[in-house]
Image (tube, rainbow, N blue to C red; front, top):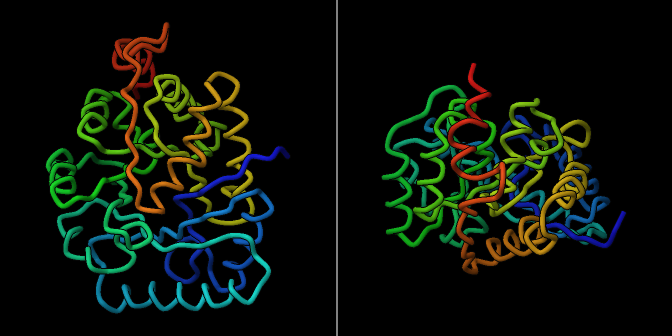
Length: 271
């Protein structure tokens, strides 16, 4: 392994709160696995939806506090932080005072995801409201929403509004199938993404090794300065609450031009 280090903005290592780590022992093994793969900063992003209540909110807080205490007892070089992966819903802003609602409780960045089968309305309004509150929204794994493959104009619009875009490392190495691989590759060529994250759920399958695999894959066709922004500089800035200013999406890049992505190229992925 080379000397690259990673800041992982999205993974499910917090125990007992979602489909990630089942217990404290699993959490600690995931953190150990992250350290083995040169991850130095990692953010717990448990799934949060419209059914969130005070009891579940407190469970997230308590479990993270317990995990943090255990990490401090061990010789880990990894620093862990709390956030969440919020399923887009009308109650998002209701929970802004909760320490898990924004990344590292900095009230500057918020990670959200969309439903996997239906595109909800008013995403552009949500992005606008976030920006008005001084929060930059980050859309998790846009390449994995199949209904967006034929609506790339909307994705580009959200990007232009200031919504940051996070690729799952597994997407670019084929973990989610050929269609997702092709879309993520084409969007990466356009420098559409601002962050790459593991979205790890375990130490096998969707794990932290995918950060290395994705890094190597991206370096095959992209500038190393851009790739290093994706895996280290941008996510580290976000954790620290510093401003990330995305570069404009490349308007033309040979066969990976916006025109082709919106039209002919991604049109092949219909159905």
